[in-house]
Amino acid sequence: MKNFSAKQSGPIIIALIVIGVSFFAGFSTGVQSRPAIEKVVALENKEGGKPSTVDFAPFWKAWSVLNEKYVSSATSTTDQEKVWGAIEGLSAALNDPYTVFFPPENSKMFQSEIAGNFEGVGMEVGIKDDIITVIAPLKDTPAAKAGVLPGDKLVKINDSVTSGMKVDQAIKLIRGKKGTEVVLTVIREGKSAPVEIKIIRDTIAIPTIDTEIRQGVSGQKDTAGNPIGLQENGVFVIRLYSFSATAPDLFREALRKFIDSGSTKLILDLRGNPGGYLEAAVDMASWFLPPGAVIVSEDFGKNAPPVVYRSKGYDVFNKNLKFAILVNGGSASASEILAGALQEHGKAKLVGTQTFGKGSVQELVDITSETSLKVTVARWLTPKGTSISFKGVTPDLVVPMTAEDFTKGKDPQMDAATKLLTK
Image 1 (spheres, rainbow, N blue to C red):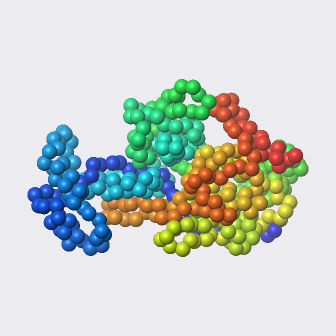
Image 2 (cartoon, rainbow, N blue to C red):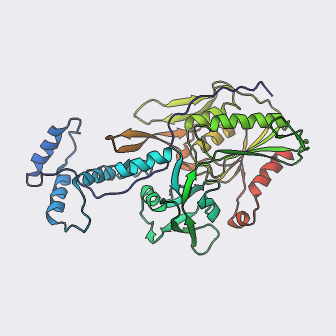
Image 3 (cartoon, rainbow, N blue to C red):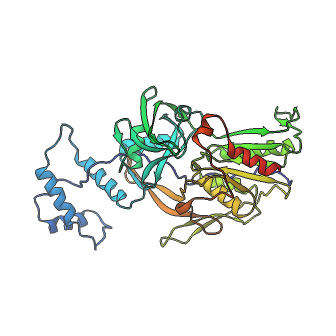
């Protein structure tokens, strides 16, 4: 092995889960009595930058009809809430589940999630085949303990049917105060009938990393108390649960333990890892790739030239390294970047099932001091130019894992990876 480096860089944009709530469309007050053409002129004169080719007359006519004819419910909607609803509808028109407007309340919730400490059940969801789908339950959270699995399709949240529901709406229903209950009804592969799962919400702290050694531990330990002196068939396992801001440092320390163990066989478990910081994935890939090797590129379409992220060239391992990465339908975003790059450069074999396919980049833009817009600005491409968004990453060795395997504590994917490295 080559010299080990402690070089580390900071994180940048993270692709995060959507949080939000829908309001009915509306825009401003005091204009319903004027002719439509005057309303358009008034809008354009009020603020600059409006597209001259867009006809706002239908919008203002709808505004007038709603104000004149709608019979208000017990809970009225303020004019400002109508403005937020209009922007939310504008975002939804793009048909991108990751482009979302956050009104004040939801913007605060989103910032709480960025901080990594919130109350809920501890799982991430997304849209898969137009259905709210579990990307992954996080380790040691209420969702994981209750038996939620990656790939579970949510058909009901309490009494609310999810058909046609946006991701942000689903998350608002799932999250809640610590100690309260939420009931999820899911469709699960291999089950003929829907499964009902009751979960008690709790404070969620997002985990990052674990290590273990499989097979052949000699009993010796290093100064930190970690096993060393593996037999020839020993396999070192790193389980990475998220690409958090601290993940690169923790991953470096895990690699140091691997080197100290004396093993040449490494399994990186990215199953159920929904992603996180792009720079964390780039930094981790750099331990295995030479300087300048392409890790991922961001395709901005017609808006800007592509941005290519390359290896920092830590490249500490020689050809003796035997390396496998475990992936499944819960491996998304930064997990797919890391796995795809190391697979295409021939550094690791992927074992498991097809990844989720979350290959887009979001930027958070402040709209007002209390509201924000999370907008998709680019798509991620693997080193060979494959879009992660459209198909995810395909394993070299496809090994399914059933709900029965999970229930019985069996792990055929881990077993297959271990056999691959030790045969």
